Amino acid sequence: MHLKMNVLVIGSGGREHALCWALGKSSEIETLYCAPGNGGIQDVAKCVSLNTEKSDDVIDFCKSNAIEFVVVGPEAPLVAGLVDDLAAAGIEAFGPRANAAALEGSKGFMKDLCREFDIPTAAYERFSDAKAAKEYLKTQSIPVVIKADGLAAGKGVIIPTSMAEAEATVDDILGGKFGGAGAEIVIEEFMQGEEASFFVLTDGTDILPLATAQDHKAVGDGDTGPNTGGMGAYSPAPVMTDEMIQTTLETIIKPTVAAMAARGTPYTGVLYAGLMITEDGPKLIEYNVRFGDPETQVLCARLNSDILPALRATANGNLSGVSVSWKDEAALVVVMAANGYPDAYVKNTEIGGLAEANEMDGVTVLHAGTKKVDQKILSTGGRVLGITATGKSVTEAQKIAYSAINKINWPDGFCRSDIGWRAIAREEK
Image 1 (cartoon, one colour):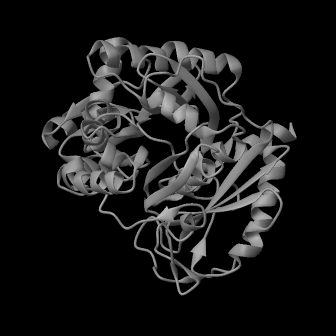
Image 2 (cartoon, rainbow, N blue to C red):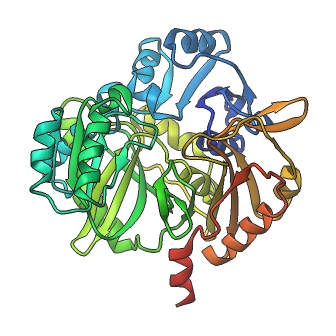
């Protein structure tokens, strides 16, 4: 007789809705909770208002509700040490401890690790002094990439296209544009190529590769305009051939997992490598220490197996021999964001037509910035919905996703019209 368990997911975005949607299918879960959740998550999990920034509140909730496993969605609580605190309280949790979460919490930490262990990445230097940074800029070619060292909600990476803009960016970030996250900057070479997202689960020793994905970070069609947290994604990523996956594992992922273990800060959880596929092979742009958003939406749409055993095996060091299976279909998600995003955006506007979109074959509408008030779904701003569709090809999944969007009535939101264009161009060839 297999006993079922209570599980808590931490977070409120599209990633957490996707994780709850996947976990909701598990035969091993008694009650699935999500804190704080959103207007859509409450259809698949019990949403609870918890201050997830306070470990003690999370631990108290876990104890009083017999929670045996916690899945931490966003990066901030991981970097702040929530998994460490849960472990100290005897509660099993999925995600890295704070000293390993520094791979995302500090871009300088990650780049120094690459330098020390010879992991392919862009050439770089770190600065906390604007004058020294500008002297270094004079030796670099434009465009150049300038990053705030700490967590800036996906917005701390600027790619100036002139020297004047580069110098102004240095002043902006070191001058406090991103608060404490910008006390130090990393300046690195601009890499040419195609970006891809690669996800693995690791228990600190063993590595289980997950499906590949590609996301669209720029706000506008044709990948133009400022970078966002992500305006859409698709899986699989055609650029990630079997050979490219092997190269990435051998030159980037395995050395990183070995390096973290060698330093006495073993990495457990999901390791998400943002890659640039260059003429010289894959190079690491950055690591994220949690599932990507919106990539998780397409990974969960293609997932064929129960995700819970894999997450638990990752957390308790038993990943060896564990596998997950994927549907042969492609999946694509289009993000709908509030008008004005990524700058100031409108809030509390009503969204209609969600049920009609959700009822389409192969479509799941995942919520990110929503709340439910009197049976109405209101936008809380930012990236609000992820319309996710599966199909025989990326081309077909894209058609289905956009026909679902046509059923949604939300004049105060927008989306890109070309998500998946690179893959579709390949399929047309």
